[in-house]
Amino acid sequence: MKKDNIICFRASKELHESMSRVAKEDRRSLSSAIEVALSNYLKERGSLPGIEKEKRQYPRKALSVPAVINQSELGQMGLGAVADISLGGVKVLIPKDFKQQILLDSQNSRFEIIFNLPAGNKPIRLSCELSRVMDAEDGINVGASFVDADFKSYKTLQSYLM
Image (cartoon, rainbow, N blue to C red):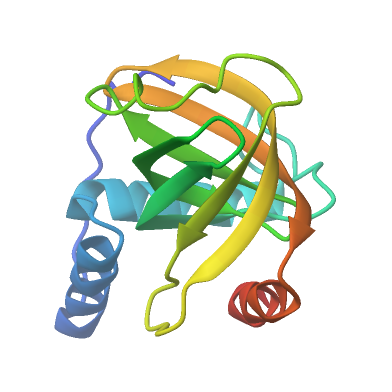
């Protein structure tokens, strides 16, 4: 979506501080965090032209945490960042610097993703199956569905998302 308009408005100090804190937690600019909040509100109401309500079985939640991608069958391991997650799958951004370390180019390839949720102290380990790979400006976006999960990890993820 092209960004060619500016919106200016006044806000309370508390709202500004809260949005700034959320932006920092999500590693976004304040402007980007406000845009996400407004977009989500309009999507929920069905008021954003050209965008319908969520069609996925499980709604996604934006997240920005580092992750280790382990392909033990291939002896490959690399780094990435979880961009969003749901109970059904994950989107991972793999930076340009690391995309050579991971072989995610064929459908049905599997990998394990290991990461910590915000305020979590135990690593989440989930087995994934590749769904799609999309080029991005700063690397590649990998979409994957969960195929097998450690029960405790999945339960922790479920608690986080609900």
